[in-house]
Image (cartoon, rainbow, N blue to C red; front, side, top):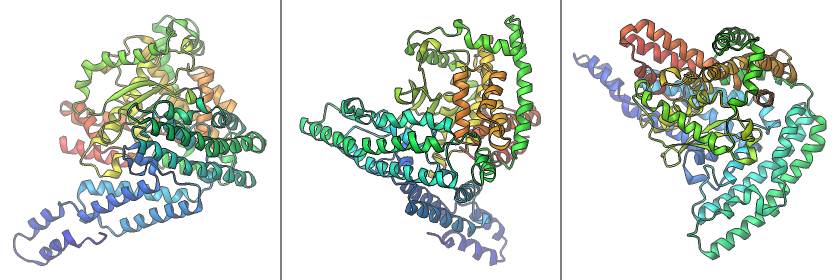
Length: 597
């Protein structure tokens, strides 16, 4: 599998020949796909699923639905290191001259993947601070346990698979506690303000109320086709699993968190206050932006973007006739009861579906390739709604599970609609749903690229999608246009506050105040956002960096192609490779521009 003679020995033979057809035949051979390289990509993907079986479940691949490896165990860490090292060595032995253009792209992407994964092992932050309030496995497992996520609960085997998976999960929960104890001794701990947000999440799992426990939900929703005997057996098995493993594991972790861990929690907010924190933040910047930008460069870019967008906001303020400064206008938008018109959560969902209907007549002008995967808007589940942001969960690879736009509605009477049009464009169509679904449906992509995610590309595309509102028949209401500016401002502010927190010694309170001074989000929402940035340094930078690159490439294409520029073709070119590092996207668009001049 890892020798490359099968295709290219013919090339070597032809190269030694002197007849007049040598050059032509060699070129023909060299454009043939390297089958051994394709097998390597398939092997990389398959081994990756075995290491991370949850990824298989989310992709709709049910082969590993009974597995939950302890990602914090030494054996799993060693196995993961060996996996990436092996494929790095494999790649280094492959000459670009043996690959087609498409394969060269795949090689460059895979090289980025393994290099970044191996660099991550230099740091201890993920190992010794394994949970937080926003990004951790205990939250995704909660979604699966509810029975409304990617884990199927349609057959008795499905139900038994989940019971087996919970054994691995409880082992992981114990390792979380052990690693966080070690983290205290080595100076790797969460800020106190984040620990208090994790506590209620863990406490809910420690509840003795079996009938209302989240992990008991599948039992309350068993298919009618199950026999009474199977139902009784599963009910007993799930009750025993909760009593004997799940609840005790959650109780142990909760007691530790609310006592020893809170006492050891950091007063500081930024990652630079942990061992080797500055180097770790530089790594996270590169990981999430796929660039070599520095924290200072990003901070200064953010300040410029905040200033530019503020000027646009002033125009809207004048358009609606508001008297007072921009900060006062923010407060007006935050508290305007006319922008909080709903009494029933279903009205929020209905409003998003109405936005979709409004833009449908225009979508064909901008996109001539659309995904087949179905799409739904749903309310965020109650167990995580209080601290959740709006989000998109991708459909399955085979298209049988729809893409879902989740909307948290903790208090419908306080739900403000001023940014809903931009939010739909970002999280749903043509943002995440189009980009991710088209990537998953593309039969020309190798399997590992169908589920690949680069935040700078994926979130950059989604933020770019917000700017398409007027072209899609939206933003006719000045408050909705202001909502778009507000969401763009939100991402510009992220450049300032994320770098402020993690490289300039800003406090949580400083970051919250900066946001309050420059955007119209509520203080509760802003506080949740700042704490999100504290939990995952660098992730918040990806949106604006990616958006600015896509807008830059569109402007360049419009200028250089003139009347030959076609917006749907440009969108095809951006979306066609799936998620890629920004430098590779730029190379691709530049080649397209050159070919179409």
